[in-house]
Amino acid sequence: MEIRLATTEDIEGIRALMRKYHRDTISDEDRPDGFVTTAITDEQLTELIEKERGVTIIAEPVEGGTDRVLGFCFAAPWEFWTAWPLFRHMIDIIPDYEFEGKRLVVSDSYQYGPVCIDRSIRGTGAFADLFYASLAQFRGRFPVMLTFVNRINGRSENAHNNKARMETVGTFDFGDNHYFLMGIRTDAADSYTRKFIV
Image 1 (cartoon, rainbow, N blue to C red):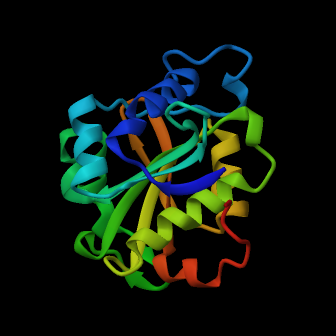
Image 2 (cartoon, rainbow, N blue to C red; image 1 turned 60 degrees about the horizontal axis):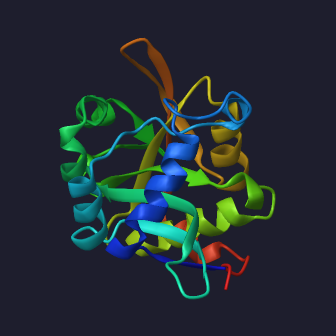
């Protein structure tokens, strides 16, 4: 397995993994272990891959075929996310929060997520490897990465607090859902000591 930036050839594999673990299509068996909520079109996904270089994946080579995608995470500047009402709301409220004693600034941060790991490699350290590989991609562009976690998604909250060592900046509501706002400095990627999957 390897962790790398996605190409458009990986879109089908990303889609397959997203269908497996998306809130609208996940099996009842898998739902308690977490789910993805963001919907994205092929056009948006292509832009995220080609223009933003914001899709990091865990890929398993398949002999004579396209790599199997076992994990993915998305990340991009806030401008990319303005098509989604939830992210527009986040852009509006970010200046209301502080991180490490300083008021958050939209232009100094970017949005990460969703992230998804196939059940077959959970518990192997793959989540942290993928998280920090993605963080490293943006380390030279922004000082702070932000994300949100639905407060009913306990597995995701645990992973981001304990494995990714993110700080809960605060909470916010949107629609009928309640979220944690979380942040981390991108230079935290420099201190990640586990070797990325190769």
